Length: 306
Ligand SMILES: [Zn+2]
Image 1 (cartoon, protein in one colour):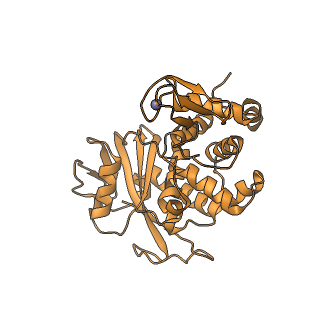
Image 2: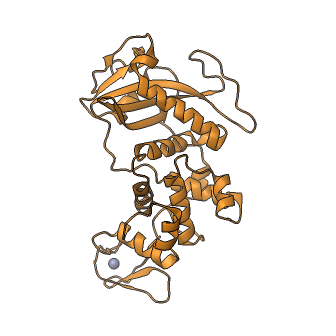
Image 3: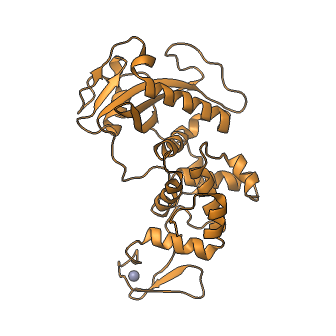
C-alpha cells in the first residue's frame, strides 16, 4: 500500500476514519517508536479511555497523538485535518479558507481560516537546506489588498499600495530547482542582503540584475549580470513572479500584508514539491506533527518578517 494517497478516492479509502489517521500520525511523529516527551522513556500503553493517547510506563504522563503539534486541542476530526492537508498540499493552486469551508462543510469561515492558517505554518521544513549553485535573485512588488479591491499599482520602485518581495530560484542547467520568497521591508541595502544570507548556502552564486542592494552580502560573492534586460538574464525568477501574482489574485484575490510571509511560504511549499504532490501531503502532516501549537492570538498577530 502506498504511503501517500494520489487521489481523493484513495485518500478516502486509506483514511476512512480517525483511527486510520491516528495510526498514520503516530508513525510520522514517532518513526522509531513512541518516546515520552517528559522523560524520554520508550515504553507506554495506549489508553482505552482517551482517544489516541499514550501513558508513559515510567512517569505516567499522558500524550495524545496531537498533543504538542499543530493539531493540539483542535475539536475537528482528524479526517478533516487530513482532507484539508490533502487539498492544500496536493492541489496545484492550493485552497483558500473560503473554498475549504464550503468543500468540507465546516461550521464557520473562522474554523476554515484557522485550519488553513495552522497548516500554512507547517509549510516550512525547519530542516530545509539553503539554496546551492547558481541562483537567480530578483525583487518585485505585488499589489496588496486591504478590505476592498487591490490598490492600483505605481511604476518604479515605489512601495505605495504594493508589497516588495524578494525571490531566489536555483537553476541547474536549464531547469529551475527550489525557490525561496520573502517580503523585503524596503529597498534599502540591508534587507536584500539579509535575504541572501538567510537563503543561499555559502559558495552559491547569486545572479542578480546588478542592483546594488545585493552587493556585499555577507558570505557571498554575487555574480552581477548588469542592469539591462533582467527578464532575459533572469528568466526563471521572472516566471516565478508571474506565477506568484497569478496565484495570489486567482486564489486569494490579492494577498494581505499582515500574513504575507505565510502566503509566500505556501507558494514556495507547493512549488518546491510540484513534481511529487502526494509526497507534499505527507510532508505537510510530518512538519505539522513536529510544529508547536499555535493559538488564534498568535495567528492573527501581524507577522514579523526578516
Ligand atoms: Zn515519561
